[in-house]
Image 1 (cartoon, rainbow over the protein chains, first blue to last red):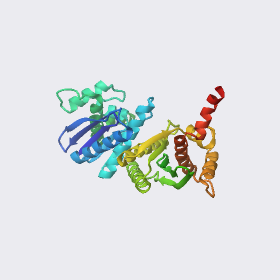
Image 2 (image 1 turned 30 degrees about the vertical axis):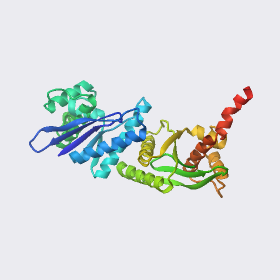
Image 3 (image 1 turned 180 degrees about the horizontal axis):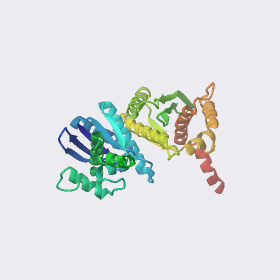
Length: 174
Length: 174
């Protein structure tokens, strides 16, 4: 199974392609950034973003795309770009016939680093360890995108930290 | 000159095509709604919206597109759709090589109805009068879209209600 994780943004959007097979661990196939220039006109930036997202889907043919669930932010200008980037992820995936799932940042942190309030640094370190990488992915947007993909794979297996943590109280109650 | 006004929204997006020539008044060429079903998946709705917007640009070939400048709203779910629709307007216009301008709702009300706090009903009535229509455009989204186009044409002429109102105090000071 191949999962494409997306940490959405218009200036800087992290992506991470992760494979997982029966009996095999997770393998980070590719990870990086889509970037558009904040000084360029909005229509040009969105066109460029959509083109890059479409290329990612064509190049890596993921089974599913996982994008971070967004909340309103304090900085309206940044938030608009994030919301528009998420829209284009859904648009590109619909056109490519790929399903899109959303996880909250807290769910991702719980699944990957063991608790929902993990720091960006902890997420980067865990992604480095799980992916057996020589160094932590930079910038954090890239690590977050890989973590989104890992979170979904953990949930699919039913054995992720998120599941384990959320099941613990139930087991104790028995 | 042909202006396409857009009152953005994903469930319901008003549009109005208005022509204006030297010595001639404004003529409403077409006005209506782009609608997508709130129950459909987001990617499907955005794909449909982009397709309809692209068709509008191809069918009417406006010289400029005028879209309402959006602010954060209380209902986050609605606001996301509006922000994503605005993004697709910019995307479609960039692809069609048409410039996009933004006016605030208050600027439009001032230009069309004479004061920035005009009601939706007043805007509908003024659009009916200016456009010499048998009845007020319904729903208000359609009237708002036509009003956006009229606002831009008034500003282009330099003789709109908005300009007149903002100039008056200067004239009095002379």
